Amino acid sequence: MAENTPAKVTRSAGEREMAEGTFSPLADVYEDESEIVLVADVPGVTSDGVNIEVDRGVLTIEGRAAFDVPPEKYTRTYVGFEPGTYFRAFALSDEIDREKITASVADGVLTVHMPKAPSARTRKIEVKTK
Image (cartoon, rainbow, N blue to C red; front, side):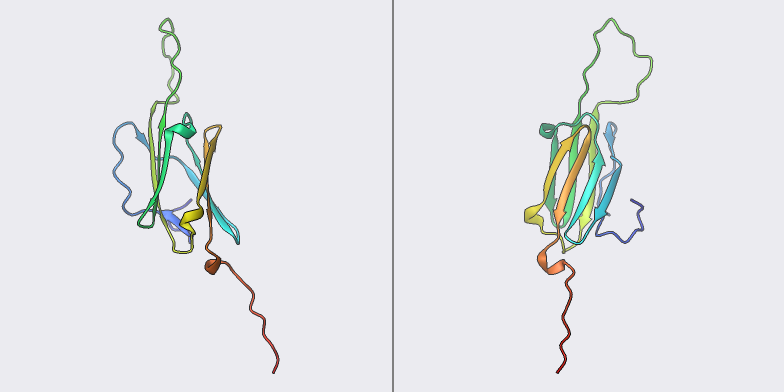
């Protein structure tokens, strides 16, 4: 997601400086009339290794990636994945129903479903003739 897109979920201005071994996962945000869905790449993270919190309008994602290390008889010749921590923060608009946010992780992809509050959903107003 580009930083200047008019999405309802945006990167938090308070996102902390990345420490060594901390990665900012790539993420996409999708929206329809009833919810906003955030999809983030977090290879090596399991459901036990991820923490998602909402505090003061900021959704934070933290996950610890761990990988099986081959036996000592092997020599590393190329490193594409490093163990470490994923961290990403997003500012949420008031239209998100924070009590109904759900998340799942499968095959290295974290999916966060954020339903819109009923008051934020689009509804058609009927116009009557007098």
